[in-house]
Image (tube, rainbow, N blue to C red; front, top):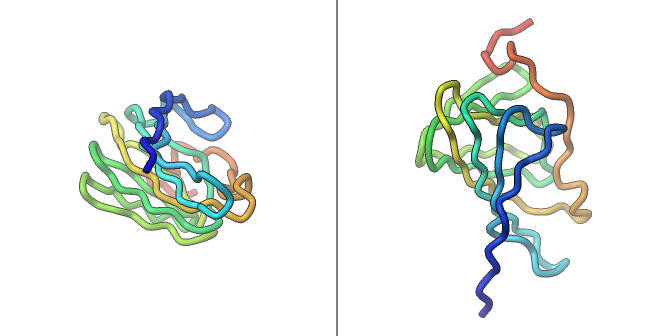
Length: 135
């Protein structure tokens, strides 16, 4: 058995996030034979990720606040505490807190063969995309 170290809370980089977003890594692989990654991610009101996808998909379990998740086809889902959203491998999406509320979720995913290729980041989402307005 191994008691895992408590890791420092890190503010996510502005190249991949708009607004204030913090991450606490909970589970990281001990070696190349392991792939599981779990993080607690906290978003300030209106904060959001850039567009991105995950090589092996991702589960997002909302623990507090209201989360917004969007896909390239303009579909937006509001997710509440206790609900879990799954994004399949390669699906471009974004996640954010709803306006006026902090939001926290657990992100659960597996690293790709090359951990650096686990998440493919793209451009920031627009206010229109966040608000669900097409065009």
